[in-house]
Length: 226
Length: 291
Figure 1 (cartoon, rainbow over the protein chains, first blue to last red):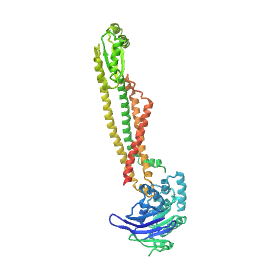
Figure 2: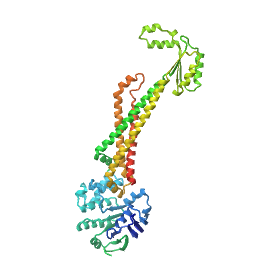
Figure 3: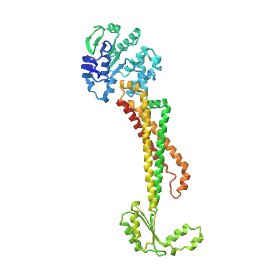
Figure 4: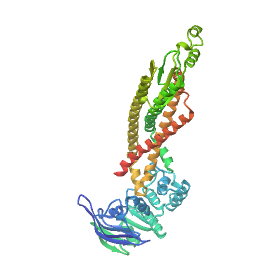
């Protein structure tokens, strides 16, 4: 489903964010991407979304080389990947329902369809009662759920969650991770980039460890530490 | 939320900017409508003078030309290919015209009869430029005693019309450019305010057109509103000045302007409004999306 082949990313200032990394993630997998800050986790997401271009190597999603994708096809690629951003990227002047419905609006769905599908996904993340509230009226955990709902509503093939538990207490973090597991069980490939040792160790899933732009370990049932 | 709904939400949230844009567009389209009506009117005045006899040749008083003499002159003028109209007015016809014009003054009618009136040939040219040549040919025809030549009237009208067109187009171009620049600035400001939202939309898969449409509709709204209001104001001004126009141009049928022409002017204004508004918005969004 996702294949990185000898991908490097060097920024203009000379910083090497990724150095010849290769890995593959199959359809329906749940993968943790771990490593210290600056290891290159977010760069992987930005490369997947074609927000950045790799300096070398190839990135394939469903066999299609992302690096060769034409500019006009980037939106189609991005609709395949539901993204939970580290900084949420919510629109604060829109209600929960409107934020979640954004992806459907982009797909050109009717107001009726948007309402029905948004309601369904809000129920899944446990926010159906808060559809008419604005993001600022919600807690950190609920914030994160809106972002997950927004990513899920378009039924993406891949869900990439970048530090989804970063600013949350342990209980809320578990709620979010359980939600991601639930989504994965429904068949969506889930990639979670995290620093949360406890959650990674408890879940016993595949762990890809990045350090200084290199993959230092890739274990099927891994732990946070090497 | 549909694209149009998003556009109107954007407009409602910045009412003063919207008002400024509509006012600028209004001024532009008011000028365009006024210019179009003035241009149309001037053209009709010119046509009126062009259709009137432009050269009249008078012959010996009381002595009509024979059919052969008239034919010779006509053929000579026709060889230029520029003759639009040719009319021979006999002494009897001249008398009838004179009597009709002075029917209220018996003293003048008593003094004049066909014997003291000259026969004449009235001609008009296909274009003003060929008038001098036709005049010259007529002058050299046998028996011509006097020539009345209206080239100056038509020429000065034509030159006025050219000037009106030149200055009108200049002012309209200036106003159009100003409208486009103001709408680019206003939409540009709105884009800056919505920068984060646009970035989020792009990251979750919005195409450039999805981002563009609400702004394009906003520009089209400004353009068409200004076009409609400008046309309406020009129409009201035309109706208000109708008595004045009638008193100035009594013989020329300038007003009322046919509703079909006013409708065509409205359609043309709205079409231009769409083009100007959409172009300005497109340029503003294009600058942002290119970055």
